Length: 267
Length: 273
View 1 (cartoon, chains in turn cyan, yellow):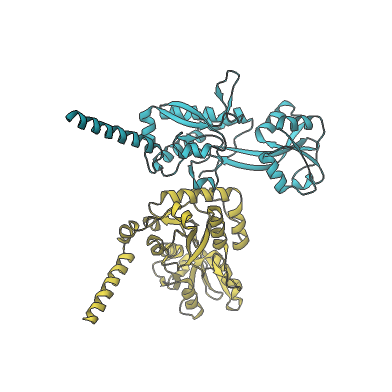
View 2 (tube, each protein chain N blue to C red):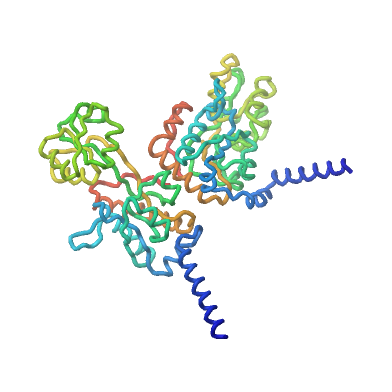
């Protein structure tokens, strides 16, 4: 009898503990910072299929600017880093259901996403540019009129080009950036609309030939976390501010993205 | 008996009113008004308070439609939240009570950030700016703040201008507080005061609206103020969303476009709170 009582009690306790464990990660207003430190490990969602921000190197090890920034964050917290691979589509669900503590996946800050998650102050920027041969007169969307502009199908650059360029601009869509790049190198197009890191890479390869003509898009990315945890936000904002000021963020950005980190605003 | 009950009721109402007006209101009302971002989204509507008699920030145009920079920012905010906008008209003086009693979700209307007000409400990062000025008829000799000595100066109660004027005006000046800017303005038009303290932006509207009165902007009263969204203290989640909105719409140029179109001045670079 006593044993039974003990059993049911311990079952209750176990159930309660299990219940807490399930609820704990997603509880609004939770002090997740203490949980992370006690656990000795921080779970960071990173997209490892978006070079140069997140990628797997030749040894199949995670690398890229976000991986390096996450390593810095774990070191400052004094805990281990566990990288949880995420995609653009599942970043928010992974965060909200507690499968990760933080998302660092070039997570662009926007009012729409802010209805679901909290963002720290930004620590980097992504964007697209229009590049063309050095002698070209292209300065803005206006000069793209009637020109052939290469772009990768389904990219943000394509969306921006479609939205901003005159209807008479000849947008030539390629299956991916490799094909679009090849077309530009072969002189089949007049300009190429692409992401900043790709433009930087091409220009670095032949600086006498190409240059960035104008920026199309820029968005700032921050660390994403669940809504309601002011304590964790405060720590992450302190981390971001500290490493922006001491130059670490600029070093990581320049190493991977290939251009200087622009002056970063605060949120 | 009925009379007594009536008086008792009056007394209760008065007590409640006093409670609202005193500092203790915060504790009482905050517990009853757990509004937040989710409540707004579920309701499908955001209640935004602003003084609708303050052109070019917020006013009713010839077609009797809300207009002005604050109305445009509020529309953008509601659009980004995916909800309808309901503007709740307030005066400058009752903005804080309206917010803390839960009659609005967010307070706007060029709601300037200052520490005294921050004892009652939380501010987002600022999205606009103004400077207070002294407006007076052309013939009145005021070339510096020191010239306000011995002068009667009208100002609207509860405004940023009231704060900076009280700090900057010489002791010998007489600051006369009115319930709103319309009354303060009327007092100057009637010659009951010598000058009128108001933000530079509405002051410019008065200069063009009443050229026959020959008003002039005499001096500015530093420092420049920054205005922001106000939310109830403790509304951390709503504040975070509003700050994200200010960040994003500041970065993409929307806030600058609205300000420069309706206010007419260049928007200075916004600091972050």
